Length: 348
Image 1 (cartoon, helix red, strand yellow):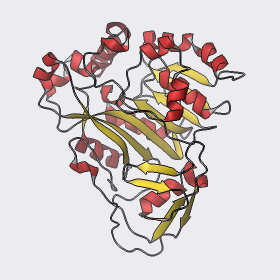
Image 2 (cartoon, helix red, strand yellow; image 1 turned 120 degrees about the vertical axis):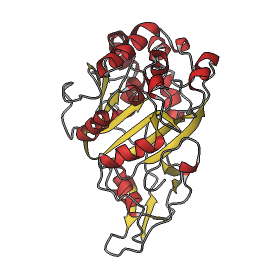
Image 3 (cartoon, one colour; image 1 turned 90 degrees about the vertical axis):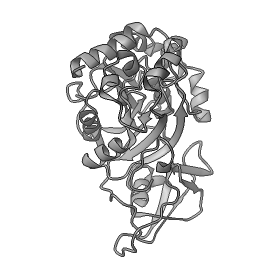
Image 4 (tube, one colour; image 1 turned 180 degrees about the vertical axis):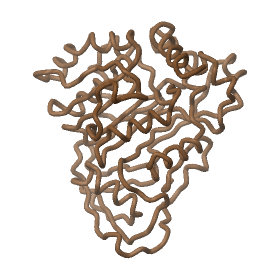
């Protein structure tokens, strides 16, 4: 399939073949992460029709979002957009982008419902039709978004390099990409990449973990972090026969639009979390091996120091030290790349 036929096949699969979550043939596009308590609470207020057409594989909701501008790529029926709507509050804004008419129709149908449910005077969401590979055509300006999220969508892109390049274009300096997706422990054979069912089920388009690492580096993102990961069981005998030699995992990854180094370097810096993020009084998790306990100093590499100091999390952290004195490589702890399907950045 070429790029256009791939996009047409995905639109048909998610707009016509799938009518509800239960129509999926595998568990790849089903959420594996348990969402935070606050998200579970908001989820009860999301309209049933919106939830019934949800096809995500994670929980891409970082904390401290009040007042932020968020872009949800491949928003589908709008479940995550409405969750984020509540999290950013009436002073924030959430843009949901999708290419599928049928999904957007469901999302738009319930704008007033959620505005009233959340007690907002006016809607703080907007749904835009467009392609994640061309956010400019969808009217998303450069350096205009605090946070880009996506839930099991980027694997569906036929041009992932362009999609990720567009993400970093629209993010503000210090902004964050926080997304969940499906990854593979090897490159998918070309003939299987042409299978519309395997593609629609989020398997054939899954990035090989090392190709993802290389791509991010080439786009200027030298260090990204894994927040959560879990293996995916296909659970379908016919699909297993086709692609069962590949191990898949759902990963939630965060990356910042910051000038970071490609290795964890030691400058003797110390950081601690002040405990002020609503809902997170005792700790803050940067990634799967950096858990900051409130008021407890932690030695950090230069990249980790910048992530918590130069993003919007800076107001919640105290960082002591600068980069005038270099002390060599920093041991950033466990290396989740040793697991079956865990891509890693400089600190992972």
